[in-house]
Length: 402
Image (cartoon, rainbow, N blue to C red; front, side, top):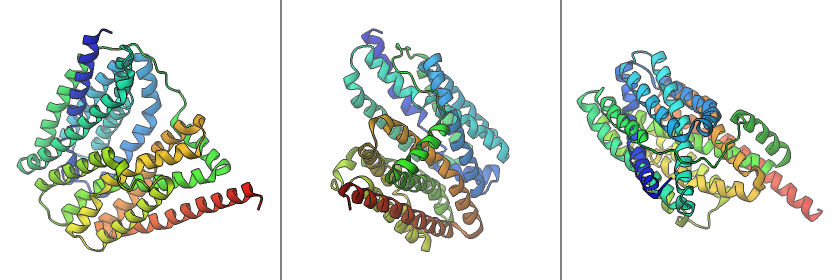
């Protein structure tokens, strides 16, 4: 690959990332399912659970496909699947059609996940510029947030004009993303992925953690609780606003704020309470998250809306500290596996917890849903913290011969 192709790939990846993340329907997805398709909040979370399961199931097969078929073709196929998914959602009239569309979108995410970063890395590697990867990848990710913020503001206003308008504009952006991928140049491939299924990794890792390193097991449980909750809060925002009778036009501004907070937290998080690290940081975040859910659940207020909207901060601030703790506790041969396993297991954790949350919310309101979820977090989080602390204490006694 020559330098001209290298530079073109970089520019195209920036534009592609911006366009594919202009998810105009995102801030009004729950109102769309409710008003247009006639689904409840629990139905919506069921559909999102199917989406999460699809991403988990197709993660490794699509990774193998990227290594054998090529990153460029995977990104092209991924963009076409995104177009098909959103196009189908435009015409969907029942839950089964919506589920089919979310499966397409789940495969789209799995197909592009890793392929985009791998194509960028291999592009730079072909010109011996791999040392620039961290800087350029960071810039590419920033375009992801810019696209999401722009689309969120746009989607909220378009929905008030016509409920189908956000998806119509969405298709325009996705078509642009398809066009960008078409002009990419496939670099020589340098990295090969494992063909082990992620569910196998989850089983092997949990056996290792429970029987060989129980402090890691406690840490993983806290990660599951915290990061599955941030995803639930992302969707709870729209339901919370609906019960407060806030017009959908404001959804976009709130979601744009969530994305900006996440972007700033990811970029500057290392400067915020730098002494707060590792497992202690996650335990504090979980405790604060429980407190925020309790306050938001007591009564639907603007303060409550603000508190659950801070989920972007919890994720962006907490994830690097989770990774730091894993890196400190686990040998290099298992680090990547445990980190990827925790991420995939979080998606699986979202499935049952979101269904319980949706059922309670539909029956007794978003406030009660938040309160029950806070209680579950408190019980499981306390158990995980005690389990981890007890194991650490036993290991220290063993080390000192006490």
